[in-house]
Length: 187
Ligand code: GRF
Image (cartoon, rainbow, N blue to C red):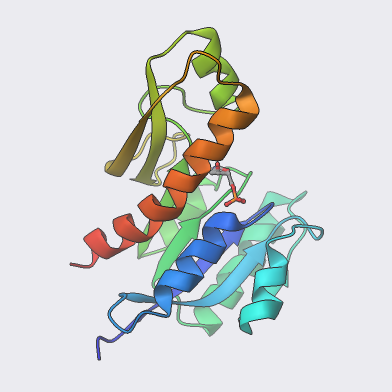
């Protein structure tokens, strides 16, 4: 059996990407194990996956970024975490945090980066009448949605797409892309 890498997933909301990573990680050959889930939103639906799959999960308030990151780092050390995955985590990690975490930090973003960094992606894609959109997994650096790209998936924007329909179709792709990107990192 491959020696799996202890991984922490940071979330703020629904956690559907978290769910897809956990499901993939049950495969014998998948390179990581989700050992820790941290949310900065105590009502995040995604925390339920911690309960459901019996994975250690924590909520930390992130109003004070310094204290939030210190709390995270304590848990990360305790659980011997060697990969951090941001999955719908709505907070930008500080330069210091990124510098001090010796291992990889990756994120998923619902656009074809470097296009449409930041919030309200689908709205902007529709407004610009883009032909394609999609999702991207990338390394995290101190600039928002700007680290080296690991993998992308592309879809066609339909003429009658709404923000909701586009979001739904792209999210489906995200659920395949994130596990694929993790596999490719540790190949
Ligand atoms: C996803 O679209 C992700 O790309 C973005 O936030 C959303 C999170 O969805 N960063 P979920 O919480 O994984 O369901």
